[in-house]
Length: 433
Image (cartoon, rainbow, N blue to C red; front, side, top):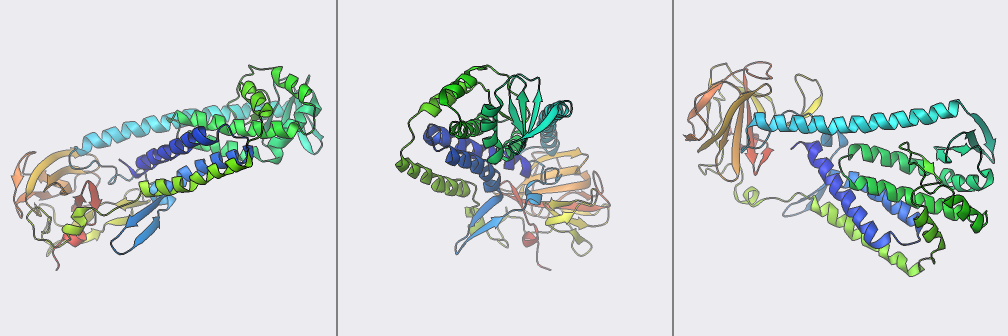
């Protein structure tokens, strides 16, 4: 799975954990400002926590913060290839259709959001705008009032003073910032049904805060009558704050509810261990193979020979970040490229079994060897392959020949060492010159 795909799933897990904790502990508390801060912080932390990787080493613990550029390297063709047990063509096809589905859904929601925003802007341009108490007010023929950024849209038949008292809270407390962040998160995680509930809870906290502010300036009876006037008002898809929503009953109950005791603030202390738990859930731990099988071990199943003759070959692209030779963009290279004459033999670096062979437009003729439960190796851009899937190979046995098939700029071998399903730097597993 690509870096981006794994990242998105981790973000979904974080948002789910933060939301469930809110429902269990905080949802019925009257600390509206704290609840708003918790939900917004939980949303932001959900995107940040998966970027922080904690590595556990025998002598130290190091925290490595990956950059957004590395994390969002979705179209890294080498990294997107499946592990040894799955043929590359099948994995690439699956990744392609998943990517198409994901970005299609995102594009649809983005277009719908932009259309809604455009409709609000057209409404503003066709209506009269005045300034009341320092707030831009657009009076027009709409069914319900709402605020959009720092502008209030007002039905021409409503009580202006009452609505301004409510909408001013939305504007003064910058609720539009929360809504924009929520819309961006909802676009990136559109397939997660919990995002609908997450967005609903943030908007509900906004309404609680605006209700509390309005009740300081108007009579409760008058305000309740206004709320009950349009119970089933339509929901707008644009990032707006609406006075009339389907949550009227909840808002009236919360307004009338006895304030939560101050001692209940201690409940929010559980957030700290939750964040620590999520950080450690995504930590990187060394495997037993890393400790017990260091590079240089001469065991027959550990890659220890060079796959090509290093007297006539040279490394032209190392493992790690590099500028892609085709796209020119920075990407992560999951192996090393060994330049050699076309037709030079490619040899197995250790005993093993051919686990898959095939051809695709990226790798050309490719081959995987499974050496044991820990180590596998991959070979791409071969001119031809001598063995079939299921054949056993011995260390040093010729398995194919150097070529320039697939996405290649010239004759070379792309060579990967895979440990526990993840590509690692092949350099330590090559014989020292």
